[in-house]
Length: 458
Image (cartoon, rainbow, N blue to C red; front, side, top):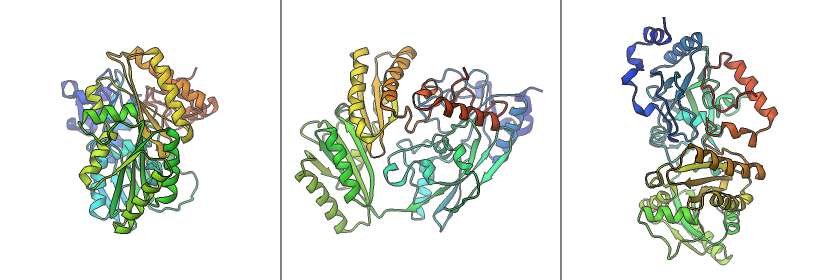
């Protein structure tokens, strides 16, 4: 019996897509670098289905690529020729929200669905990404997603109390802990968070929830230098107790997206624009304090101009520029790099990176934006009709600088295939060797998301 026949017999034909029934959407994540449709797509509807599927694939030595919302940008969910994709799209739903502010959720649940369910109960899911409508909770954990609330609530792993994962041999490892304190040996949940499906497939998650803020205050600030951006961040962290977002945009990025959206905020495009957001109780005193903070920043010479959103609609207009969703449409093939380093070095890195990229590609669009409050910078690069060779050159130029700055080649998008060959720019040989040993221990037949994250052994 072939692996496909075995899977159909165990799961039923409705959960195993083959041939023409495999849609194009399973070809690639949002990086659009996937070249092959999977041999088959498995669509389990229960944890038991996942366990059975992996048992069969492990027995046949059949490679399996987990797929979530396919919003990743590192090629981590792309199948090779002959790989089987295991989609979590049918493993979706909220199982429990308790009064102790935890949520138990299935891994295929879209982030926005979880956010809305929490809000109905007066809670906040601290994880928030621009792709909230389509990314899935399991994928958020698998890549340890960051997003716009990290400065207040931490990255995804900081908001996970417990999880359930299925190992390559079908073993269900259930550690659905709902306590904040649980110091009972190795913390196995952290083994799977950020592993990009190479060690196990996450099926259930217990998230830590926060009280839903009564209101948010949002300001769009114009600044002249990156030094002013850092000084404003330091002041905001000191003077705004509910600071929840501090997002910076370099001049080229802000201009491009504001013009694309036909929005105008300032008389001229400033060298730097920052969105500051604070979660507050909603009183007049909160707003007075927020305005006083901005006023002092003017007096101190940090701000050239600032706008405070007077409505949710105005706040969304600010954020629409930051999220830059039109860039991918207007600049097809846009490359979005995702790096980090100490906050004080981001300005120098951006200047060096733009100089190096323009020296090689003089006509390229190069712009920068990011979650400066948590040391994360995104680099947007577009070359007309860029091919794979150009993509590798862009990576090589930027990541060589990252190595110089002793930063990270991936702040929140993961490694996948696109960054795998550059992993040694940020991790030592000893660290990579330990990763290989862990992989061999929990997936001895190397069926789970092969050729991802860890470079091949020389």
